[in-house]
Image (tube, rainbow, N blue to C red; front, side, top):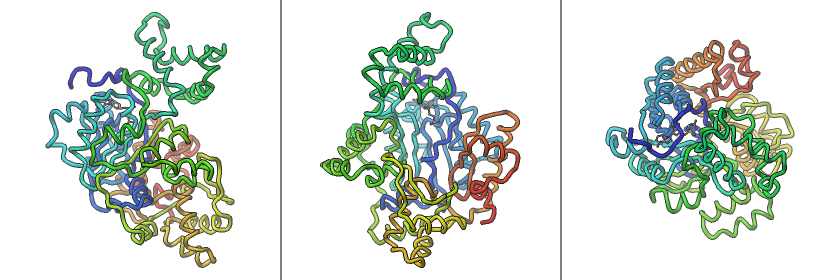
Length: 467
Ligand SMILES: C[S@@+](CC[C@H](N)C(=O)[O-])C[C@H]1O[C@@H](n2cnc3c(N)ncnc32)[C@H](O)[C@@H]1O
């Protein structure tokens, strides 16, 4: 590994983490909602995770898509060891991990790594320096296939403006041993800020959002906070700078992996939308939206030439989309949006909720059922877009997974249950061959699942009970 690749904080492992937005089924759904030709997930594909941490997400996805290949790259040897051990214990030959810096990858391995249909980079870009970001872009340029998708999430402006100064305090404390002798610098800095807040120091008096940040960070594990604040070059980014001046020209912005953010009418009041519409180009439009949302974390998806489909094909792709529900849909249905809860159009909401209650289905089938109840197909389509974007229903990969995928998911989930039960390990999600993604559980559900009890909708998605 080359010296100090980027001033990244490597003294402690990052906690196990599942990031659902990178699941191929989710990204395929985004392509459909954005009228792009979706990648075919029935054929084997290749998936690269840059800065994979200890590889939890890639191992879960490797179980879900056992015929596809997953590669994770990370700088921290303990992360890679953990990832390799987990994949070996579960029996996931299609999950491979490489201990390397991005610079190593650029300098050495190019040919061997091959090309990928998906390259994801979750929570890395805004924690590293410019040279490291350039290395990441070089990897995208060399290793993303035509038609492939890139997902990149990062701390963003203007949402971080209120709390960015806290990072300076952490860094300075880290460089001033003795000030808080026994405390890790991040804890010391946050505690110190807590005291300043209590005494209504100017930073908090003049900057009321900073107090909300302190509250929000209160229950985060220490190791998460160290990785958040300690990397030496960490700083929130602006989307337009990244998209316009940093990224390879071959990538174009497809949309936000937080599906709802792609629909202004769901996120913003009519009055605000009038001002957003004044943007003269797409980059400025995103900056306007970031101000409207006070965005602090972006989840951007870019494509390398995924073709835009015509309106007819777009509707057909949407109608073919599989959907399922993961939670009780009590009526009247409301969607949580950045502008508050909004209702799904009255009777139509009931019809749609009833249609998905019978088990996984497709958007087209729901629209037909609604039509039989007298609903206008266009209105039903709008309601379904809102329900999918708002997370009331989940995109489905297939309602008939291959046995190989059911077996791999069961092996992954069984291993997870054992880790929770015997090792008291935090297990962020379980694998569903139906959803083509992970399923996160509440504490109660986790206990029930580990005790072999039924889980309602979630059991359907994990085991296909009753499908
Ligand atoms: C905040 S963690 C995110 C981990 C994982 N993506 C997740 O969200 O759970 C950032 C990861 O990027 C890795 N990383 C940082 N700089 C790197 C570099 N130059 N080369 C390779 N990996 C790097 C770190 O080791 C760390 O695991």
